[in-house]
Length: 331
Image 1 (cartoon, rainbow, N blue to C red):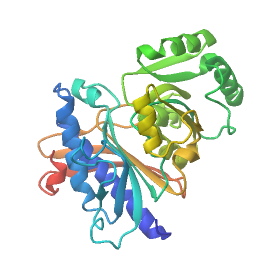
Image 2: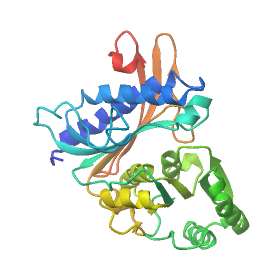
Image 3: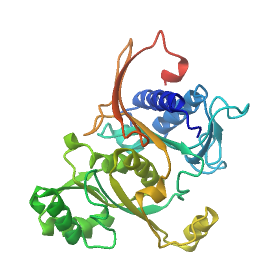
C-alpha cells in the first residue's frame, strides 16, 4: 500500500461504502428463510461496489476457490485498477454476509465485513475451524493464552481488570462442541453470552464497552479469525488463534496455502500484520451495530470503520435514497 495518508483516509471511507452495499442487499432477505439468497445478494452487491474503489486488490480471504465461488473467490482481482493498473496494490479479506442463517431467521448480529492491508498482510487461512481467544484493548500482552485453562484465563483477566470473575462476560458460539468450555467458564463463576453465529462480531464486541463482553472463547471459522484479527490490530485488542485440522484433506489444504506448522498458535500481528483497515456494516441489529432499516424511499445503515495506522474508530450512520443511489445499493 502506498504510504500516502490522504489516500489511506479515502480508502477507509470507501470500504464503508462497499459494506453498506452488501448489507443493504442482504437486508432484503431478512427473515425470509433463504440464507443462500441472502448470501448471494450480499456477494453480488459487494462485488459491484468494489468496481468503484480506487485500488488494485487481490482477494486472499473470500467466498472460496474459483471453482466454488463465481465472485469474490480467493485470488480474484477487484477494484477500479484491478485490470488497468495504477492504483495501490492491496490484499483484501471479505465476508459479505457473516451470519447467513441469522439473516434468514431474522436473528441478531449479522454483519458485512471487509479488511484491507498491504500485500502479504493477512494469514492465508483455509476454510477450517480455528480455536480462538480474544480480549479488548488496554490489557497486558499475553494476559490470556490458548494453552491455559478457561479458569486460569478468567482469573488472570479478572485480576487485570480489577474485578471478580463473576463480573466477566464470556462470548461463545452456541454449539455442541463448546459444552465443556461453557461448563468450565460457569464453574469458574463467569457469565456467558451465547451467540448463534457471527464470531467476527463476537470478537470485536470484546473491545466495545457498550457490548458488555469481556472475552471471546471457542472454535469458529479460520477466515473469520483473520478478519477479527484485522479489527483487533486497529483497536489494540488481542486475539490468538490455532487452526483445527481434523483430517488429511484439511492438512493438505493448509499446506497448499503455506501453513508449515499445523499446531502453530498465531498472534494478532501474525494473522493481520502491517497497516490494515477494517469496515463492517450491520445487517441485523446486535450489541455493536444497528441493522439496516429499509423503507420505500431508501435505507439507513450503521457501520464501523477503523485504521491501524491511527487507531481511529469511526461509527457511520448513513441515509441512502433509492432515487439517488446506483443499482449496487438496491439489492
